[in-house]
Length: 630
Image (cartoon, rainbow, N blue to C red):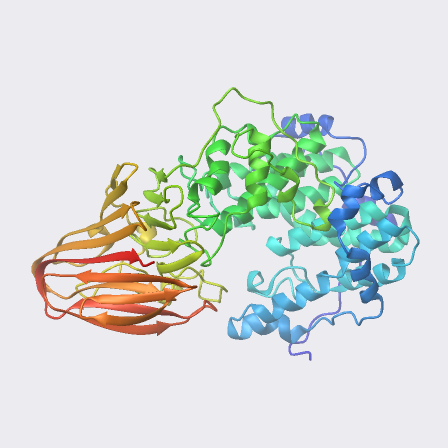
């Protein structure tokens, strides 16, 4: 149903005008941060003709290779089912749902359902090379060209993309452009020339021209970053990998491709600045897999296109960033759900293997670098390019990881153990929660208690000044104290003293001064201590010692998705996934135990168990000791 009138589609350029819109870079053009001499140098490195990772359909040896056929799986059968199916319709009401209610899923699901036809049809045609899927491919490509926009509804706040008055490049449009560019590069002369020209024109209007304008003026596309505004988030490598990959695949002129390759070489420095010197990813483990995964893709694009003369992995910081994945894991790749990270997220094994193989980290016996490249059309033919081996010793992941610059400690069990824990005294940047001092308790593959993770979906408040109205994002929903009735301040605006750790094979301990995380005038001191013991089944104790200038209320929270019950006045039993843990509470003054169910932003519901002093206190300590049960 049409809910908002829309102007008629802008006319596509005729094929004879296509060369004008894809003209090579002009030497007189002035770039905001790029250097024309460097662009010229990169142009000399590039091949005469554009090329995708995937070889053209005419290369039958490539398309009959057993390894490639195996990677494509049952794609022919999937494409056959599409031949008799109805192509999902474009729905204005689904796209506009976000602008009406702030809900993202309707529009995103509609776009994804339509885009899902491209990969199986292209791959099936290339594998068979019989023309059986070409009519459907032509119809689908025409649908894509005539879509109002390829941009996600949440990134089209003024609906300029929807109304075709101005195009902007976002996470989705860039990735989709890469897929479309790969499709027409691979299919080549199997496509109708007029349709091919229409796709190329749409790519220019919606992706190449808008980003190129920003490279000149600095206006728009703030995710790119600049010297004046060094934005630090995953959009940078994700969008650049899509745009650069698309440009290298289809733009005929070397200089034109070189402009985008130069942007891919220069601008990721702002993304890399989002990592701490110890490699810690403030955005969380899920965003490491996503953002750094696409940085890896960008690296492969530049390495392949320039014969290795440009390699973003030559940056010295890359090694520590690459090691974040192995080092942040609790047990069996399970990651702490800090920042915007869903509970249960595991670090990407393929990405870890890729980094291991390329950087020669020596962490796995037989790392599989091909596993990192998810089965997207644009990356189906990628082969990882290792760097020259260094003389460094093999990296290992031991009993703990101490991210000293971020103040994050990950404690792992000894051989045969099952209990792990992580706590964060800092590490707050993009995608931050108000969670200084948050912890997570892990028993095998179950997150028993602590940080609930999430969100599982964003809404129209998530990235505004109202972000911390959500209990899931402010400190109320995290395992941290409530001090004199006050929640924590916005964590990105807080710098606490460096936590003090003590390590041994038997036990790890860290003390975190949380006082500056609260704007409570009467608060004199607040120190959280985590102690982790590895003997037997293991033990974790979290104690919070507080001192006020005058008696105040004090409480600590224990979030959990376990089934829980009170065993006696001081003991709780938590049961989850066949595991049982006792939580013993100690406090020198009387306390109460209450609970509240919280469910927000599509995250699974959890219980917030609150331990609250029964009367105002001037000084006290609340300690919770977790012990697994046989």
